[in-house]
Image (tube, rainbow, N blue to C red; front, side):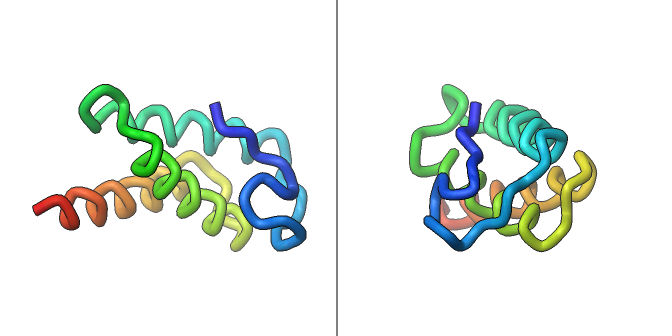
Length: 82
């Protein structure tokens, strides 16, 4: 699970996210990382999580919106590997 608090990654930069948004982010991160070998390494998971946090801070909090962001991040990761 993601530890998503108001200062999880960038102290002071993030406003408090709702519990629903945090739960949605956890679900999307887990579903997305299942597509990576062994659920993804720490750096890959963190890359996707950071993209999810940025999206949530911008007001994108639904499963659908976060899923799009996570899939784009995953595609970017996969593109870097080639």
